[in-house]
Image (tube, rainbow, N blue to C red):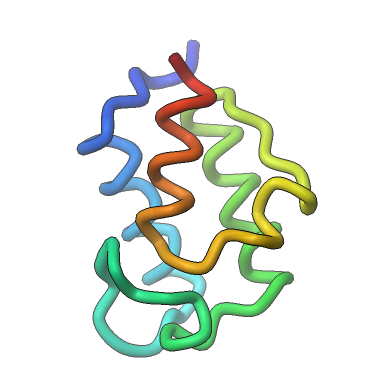
Length: 81
């Protein structure tokens, strides 16, 4: 059963996932993927982590317009509820 997708739990998973993917710099809600040197392949892997943890499926179309870590967190929380 997927974990409860609260803003805090999603943030924790996303931050840990980005660190695991080798994000450069400090991961924060305000950080952009460009600042963190996160590319589209990294975002696909991050989407897989989100799906495994919370049962929220993100497609390429969903994430292509997102610019910050906070945008992804907000999208996952919205989709999970």
